[in-house]
Image (cartoon, rainbow, N blue to C red; front, side, top):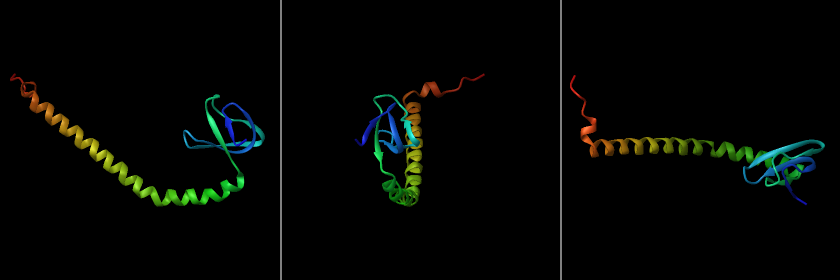
Length: 102
């Protein structure tokens, strides 16, 4: 009753794709859910969506700085690992790094 597949004709409302965490809105009295038969959706009652929207927005505002720090540290870590690997490669093959005299 509450779960539907992609391509299925359903009544208007909010449908949540549990795999991608994407919320689809079917406008009007009836509509078709996007995706194929393997895509699963969960119907979300409108009243519940009205209660969840401010909570989800508040959580986004609270965790946004943490998301920024995680992305910053991930980028710094990747840069450090790349520099470390380049240095190891240069130390392992010193003859490859010598420039030829012209």
